[in-house]
Image (cartoon, rainbow, N blue to C red):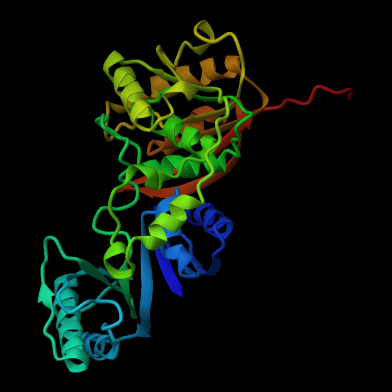
Length: 384
């Protein structure tokens, strides 16, 4: 079986490692495009949705063809036999997306593909499928990327996988949990390492780390998947049967300036069943040395961006004071991961005292952000 998964553009390599660990073969990795094509088995229909932490959606690929116009989109789609996938009484909808210059719109694609599905199904079964645009039982995904047409069955559903069920408190500038999980994986954090998020908001980074450390799948907090309407729920139960949660002690700390966010983070952690693994504190990220008398192995932070939170001058001052304070609670091998849309300001300030080991451009909603991987700058102290 061939699939493609969607994810935050820029984080393809992180997701590819996770998908390989789940037993899939990577066929194509589209860097900075948020798409990975892969080969898997029937068990991956459920397992990718239930276990994968860094992806947004799983699609069973039915067709991949070069096209030039709407007529070819119709022709190729109509060749697909949808009868094995859609039951006669089930409703369907087409969700279309378009990238590139075309003389047609995504609405046109949805209309043409929808008609092709109806015509193909009627030819093979003599049944006209029902269309339900708001609550379809089956979702057909149609993507035209420049001159390539992708047709597939959405195995996830309209609600993407980053919609974790534990987020009962919503921060005004929330971090996508799939991106948060990717940051944890990028840091090479493991259960025996201490981890600090000094501006933790509603606790997403720490909760994702705790779920990873305890081996709790993100799917535990989700009730429905689109694949159940096609394949039944036995494969989901099989996936759940493979879970081996670890009751390990973790050293996770979250600092947050506002009390209501601290309380919200605690509620989210409780809902995620990891509240016993995280210590949330009210405090100022520019005065870390006054709060902690220890050094941390890993620091991951999603600081405020000017676009969402405050004026540029305030951001520069916050970043500068935070970076100065951070030096006092880390050691030479501390891994530091920062995601920010204020990348120019951050890079300028961080370069003074830190080694920037890697920069990764990432699309975060409609924002162009950057992930920085840092360590404390090591000055040469040997003999000349």
